[in-house]
Image (cartoon, rainbow, N blue to C red; front, side, top):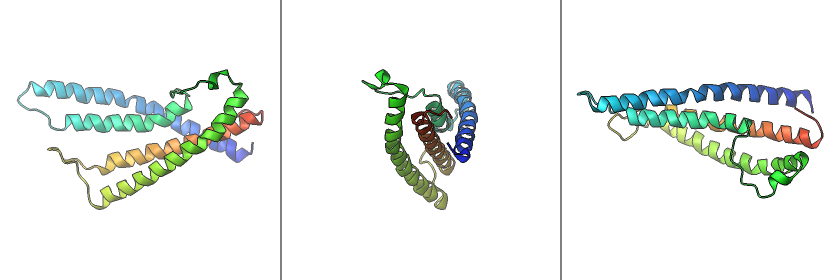
Length: 168
């Protein structure tokens, strides 16, 4: 494989690894928010922001952790035949099926960017009592989808290398 492909795979894998490791700690932030939510319900100062903040943190956890999950091959695979195939046959199937994933992620990213642009242009806010701005979480979703797209391309290059008998 050309050096630029090797560099791309190394760079994307390293970046998504770091982002994914950071995203793992978002669960602790979400737990802290939910604990505060439980405590504030029995005090005279209830919090109106906790449920929505926990949802935003969960979205960030899910979207930023997705590429890391894909990288570690910890995604759920429905396979009847896949596990019986040789690694080279699996690489062929993955190299072919990744185009469906790339198409899906491309459409998803297009919609996310359009929605984020709308949120920024019109200062979109949540219709709850807290009324936070929606743009930051939509930007996080765009970033997560973009990183997933980069990771899928990295997987494609790894599969092509595996088909050719090389290792990336």
